[in-house]
Picture 1 (cartoon, one colour):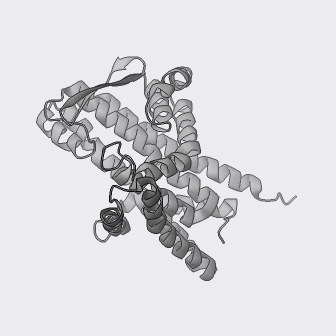
Picture 2: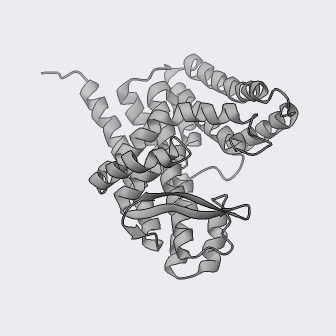
Length: 313
């Protein structure tokens, strides 16, 4: 039951995406909240400043391996119907498409109505850069970048690993991505301890990120997207965010990157994309690109499922 058939992958993935679209993330008792508390306790206990990389690897294994093993045991031990329900639940908990839309769409609406105060507050909730004095262009860039990058992190990476290893695969990806978001910073506290979390996430995200970038390119200005991916992505610090955001920006014909303020310091980031200065309309366009990509991926799953069924002539 670990390696799902293609028809099952298509059916269960579609069900999980539909549940996420209708209900969004659980408002109470989300499993990731408990996981985050566990991760914080592990970090507090093991991030002692000595043997940082080794203890970071140990912390990552202690956080990720037990829940993935339990999930694997459940889908192998339960009857078929219950195992399918567990697969659906695990992917549902790993997905964040509705949450992504619910956090970013209001920013676009606030910008469209010229309410910069509200847009700054909303944007500060989803990015680590400072937004208190950001103008419309900076806020629009932040929202579009978040939509494109998190499309991969919160949706397509989970779908990819679900297609490979079912619910446990989606769970492993989401937990690894969560640890990278918690520990994967290049700060004195996490530079050594968080090395493993960042590297594991890079490995698990490498292929999904490039499939996401290719999907973004297909669904917009393909030539510009592929050119931006080829020429601009290598300049970005993250090996996976670079291709995703460069391709997405080129697909949307919008300019991203550039100056941003982090902890009171202006950081000059490489420019991504081509064409227009980011504005409120590009926030909506980015969300639509992510939504169309979800439909594309599910259509591909269904197409492969149909092709795998023997023809009865």
